[in-house]
Image (cartoon, rainbow, N blue to C red; front, top):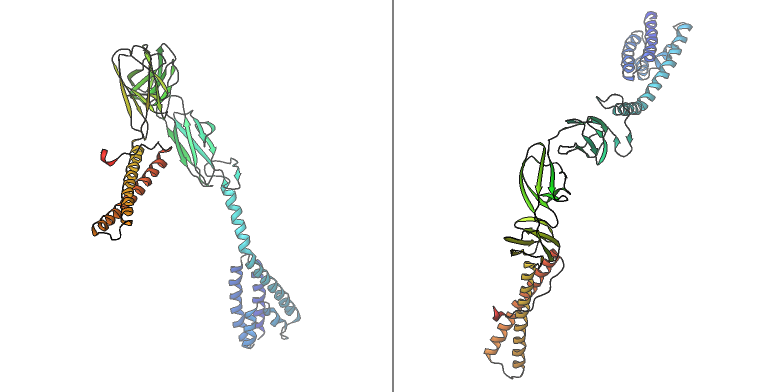
Length: 431
């Protein structure tokens, strides 16, 4: 019996040492379980009853407690068993506390590790990145261009010139625009996250540069309806290479339309303007587009200048009004032209209301006369009853048509703005 119980004591001591040395609770639990099984087997062979063995397996500290109570062992061995029983209880309770608190500690440690990693984006080195409490971090991004040296604007703010590393705002769109003299500007938009290092790469397209001189100077230059040069001589804003139609305007001089093929790079051009005769153009309402011989010159009120020779067609356009045009022949002296623009859709809707109202009034008058005539009769002939029923049906149709016409006029006026004066009623017989 004695060797078995001494072996059990040795296993108890080993179990206590294993629990003290093991840092992770799962490892300590496996070791303890192993020693519990061995202790039960060995202690049972020494004659101890199963109840005591199961109780010892249920709680590690009972190992030493049962050995302490075993009078067959010496006092030294019993004291050693008691000490290790206390150690087992201590480390068991420590494991329980760790099992409860460990997940929270690990979560905090993981959050701290994440923050440390996010504060240093990959491939950016150890640059310090400011923190936005609302959106998180500002990751660094790289902006490059071919050719380099272009100005970089991030959400309208100048940051420097390419190549450039600059912070972007995480969690929202960042619009990056690059500009370089002689090249077309380009824009890109991206939304980075707090860990992302973006690369904005621009391949700038070379523009055509036009240096224009006019005789006399001070003219405006347009391409289509866009002004590309406010005053000659000067360099026009970057233009698309290719065939362009230039319109040169100067007060007191005829508009000059000039076709020019512009290659990439710089082109110099000199033009001479001829004197012209003024036509003062006005319209009601104003801000109508003014075209002379098909070329857009501006918006009314406007002074245009034409050649004193030949014919010139002047046209005014403005939505939703009908266009108005007039042809001038051999303009020898300054003249004027003013047009009242007609809103055709509104006018048609107003005329429809007037017609519907006239019809309604006419049917209503006829119905009132017939009702008065019937009131003075003691007996009403079948002919008059049929006539009355017909007028009542006609009255319903006229009222419905008037209501529909008024609704249409209201809809047009709301869409077009200020209501136009209603035309005089037009009788059906005049159609």
